[in-house]
Image 1 (cartoon, rainbow, N blue to C red):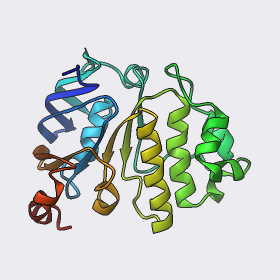
Image 2 (image 1 turned 45 degrees about the vertical axis):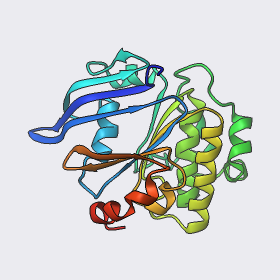
Image 3 (image 1 turned 30 degrees about the vertical axis):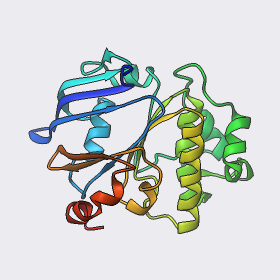
Length: 234
């Protein structure tokens, strides 16, 4: 098999003295959509943050295309083509939609142009001159993802992108994930909304107490539903 796009081995992470990840192990291959499932506090967001070098400290191994990044700075990791969309979105309220979109620098070759982004997100084109505060929650979420696509990132870390949004917007975000997958992007999602994540992912990782407890494929999902009810309460 080819070298994984993302390869994590025995990953530990801390916030101050709080030990939040306890030996996380998983791989993600190019073009895959992988979802991290688990209850709040299971370590899913901390895993995303550790990949980006945003936890207080970390040890173990995180390889991107075979290159070790455990000691790399956050900006160096981003320049390897990794884009992180945090749960809080980080939209600048005083800037217009297009100004928000153009703000991050190009970090890697092959980023989407503004016209391509507007084709994928017609809502953003309509709101190009609207201030960030005037966007709906769904539009802000689309903008947060679109902003990453312009930078050239090919590995996307998406944290709870469906949270708190109306079902019609969640459906649009699901279409977005499918389009990005069809374009060859590699995606790791953290999701509490199992109904959103279930049809989108190739593989699922169930986290508890800062570790991966289970891993299964889309094809194995029906047989694992009883265990998922136990882990997640879905």
